[in-house]
Image (cartoon, rainbow, N blue to C red; front, top):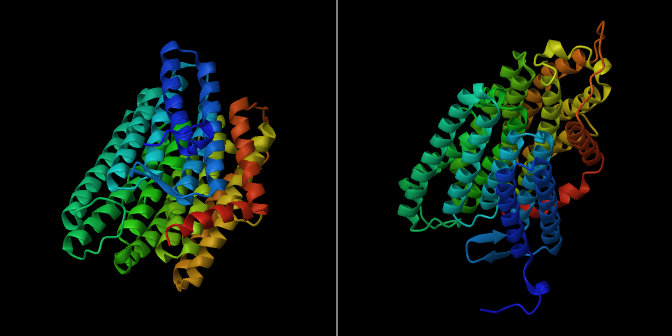
Amino acid sequence: MIIPSSLTQIPLFYYFAALCALLVVSNIRFVMGRHVRAQFAFSALFQLLLIAIIGAMILWNGSYTVLGLIAVSQFSLYFALIFTIGTLLVNILGYSRDAHYSSFAVLSSFALMGMYLVAFSNSLVSIFIGLELMSIPTIFAILLSKKFAIESGVKLFILASLAIALFAFAMVLVYGAAGSVALSNPAVVGSLMLIALALMIAALGFEAALFPFNLWVPDVYQGSTTYVTAMIGGINKKVGFLALIEVLFLLFFSYKTTFVPILYVIAIATMFYGNLAALAQKNVKRLLAYSSIAQAGYILIGIVVATTYSLGAAFFQIFAHMLMFIGALGVVLFMESKNKNEINEYIGLHKESSIAAFCLAIILLSFIGIPLTIGFIGKFLLFSSAVYGGLLPLALIGIINSIISVYYYFKIIAAMYTNKVGAVHMKMSGNVLFVVVLCTLAILAIGIYPNILIGLVTSAAKILG
């Protein structure tokens, strides 16, 4: 064993691991002392440092394994980066000087460790543990702030239990067929591997909210505290996509001709289900829940095409949707604080809070895919990858679904910019305003100049071949 002679000889990953430990330990320490402001400051500081270290590792551009268990690459680092950014935004969104935030900070830090475990995974076992470490704290986070959120917590518990049970069964079958659970494509063909593939798609379909495994997802989103919903829809479901990509392209890639037709049908069904169900919604949070299901269908296009370009497009859209969803939920959180939940209660918002109306309008236009927004770049990359990959019908179906979504997104925008008699100015809290404005600026900035993010996702996608 070589002992480094100086701190500069220690790989950055070990500093990263030390910061992860500090984040968790400090949150546990502060929650016992109830020093919420200090806890938030330390938690935000550690997450910013994690973002900086991950960024440095990306620039260093190295690929290696740690103890044979952790795989560090541009692919894993990209997802670790966006999960850290998302967790930081959600913590800022949920910050308040009470015990609920203090407990949420602890739970979200544990969930982030689970996300990291999935991102840096080198085997099915670490994916399994990572998904569990993410799901269990999320369920408790749902139950923290609302006594009437028990139904949402129980429903998420059932969905997570089904997902993890199917995943565990599939993992056993893979071990039985290949003699290993490592994420490497085995030279084994047989019925056990086919059954394992089907179970994996079902298990991770629950995690990523794909049709028909998303039955209770809108109920969970609507019944949860809004910043917890932002974490579930903005980050957790993206971890499900990450696990699906790892399993399909690192373990089952030789079965590409089998899983691509299956996911083709699921992608179409997910897009139509999410968009058509959203048309009938009156509650804004529930509408955004169905919208996120439709967005999952768009992301799945990149996986179906299964090229380096299409996977990069999927990675881009994963980050894009995270920003859009968290930003939109920030405005929803603000409106809920004023007891406004329905679309018709958003009437006249431009008079009551011009910044909230403007930011939400930009975010919704990005959901649609209007030019000069990150959503336009994401959809353009996805649909063009389908065309270049010989799947023109899938691209056309995606475009049709985008047109369908215009109706319900513009319904909210029209309500916000409809004049209202007796409108009273409403002030947004500083932390919510910060998140909403930051997400809006990022949506516009990346939409206008997407080259840096495209470069990152291209480097990440190349790792998968």
